Amino acid sequence: AQSVTQPDIHITVSEGASLELRCNYSYGATPYLFWYVQSPGQGLQLLLKYFSGDTLVQGIKGFEAEFKRSQSSFNLRKPSVHWSDAAEYFCAVAPTDSWGKLQFGAGTQVVVTP
Amino acid sequence: AAGVIQSPRHLIKEKRETATLKCYPIPRHDTVYWYQQGPGQDPQFLISFYEKMQSDKGSIPDRFSAQQFSDYHSELNMSSLELGDSALYFCASSEAGTTTSEQFFGPGTRLTVL
Image (tube, rainbow over all chains, first blue to last red; front, side, top):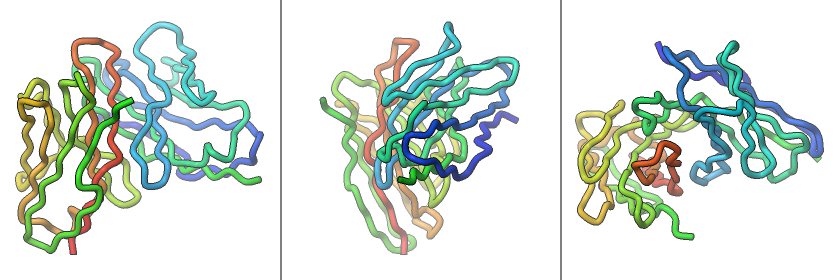
């Protein structure tokens, strides 16, 4: 069965420290890959996406993600977090023949401490 | 920049009542998606429309129906509401025809069923 796994439900990080959020997927073929961020009571904002090409993808707000086909992973990173990065982060995938139908992971809640 | 508009933002209904949620996509976007996010859950794809035709279907209950109108806005109709329908309902829109089309999410409608 197709699935998206975010192993970390909750991560606490100090402001200024680096952040890495994990995402693994199980699909028949490499799907399209996305990272979204959701602030409390807000909609989902796209941070970055991977369709093909360079496996290191740059996004908004200083985020980047690396696609590793051999590990079926698409981990999100930020070198130095800001208090405003506290939010819930969702990894999402979509099959290449129906890419509008996003399947989300369970999400990772990020807490930023002073 | 114009964003996806959803109305109402909050809705309280009793069990067995009906509810209609509305979504107004970004101008020139011709594709609309509906997602349901239960408390503490990841968003689940319900249904999508392209050029007023249903383009994909997910885990949408038979009690729910949706359509897209000539001006591309969409309505999600929910009947015989159950307590479990309490959730945040997101609408997203995109411009079809490009392989890298991004889904832009609205702020969501929070439905509470009492």
